[in-house]
Image 1 (cartoon, rainbow, N blue to C red):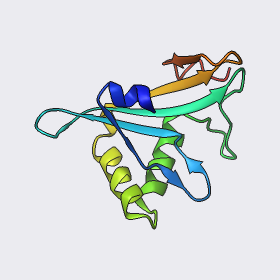
Image 2 (cartoon, rainbow, N blue to C red; image 1 turned 180 degrees about the vertical axis):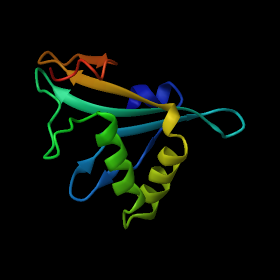
Image 3 (tube, rainbow, N blue to C red; image 1 turned 180 degrees about the horizontal axis):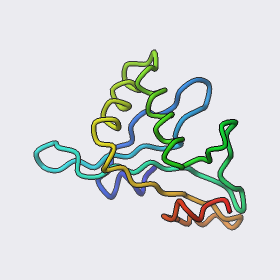
Length: 118
């Protein structure tokens, strides 16, 4: 995402399987190369809600995040595995954001995972 790049974030590969996993994982590093911030992002259009999983968890719930990180760590793609390990090693830094594209083309960012999709 161009906006995240301008803010100094690097997009990491995060898809597992055909199109599963996080819509975006963005990492910001300090001058010494150490991770300073991590954003896990999901994107929705208009009034679309975050999905519920078979186990009852919802997208962006901590359980869902943990499961996706585990899938990344077990991925056949070495770059996805590397990104999954980075997330696992820095789990306490992860912030979640929902990007909602309105019908008129405006991106709105939401940061309240407890209120999403209700």
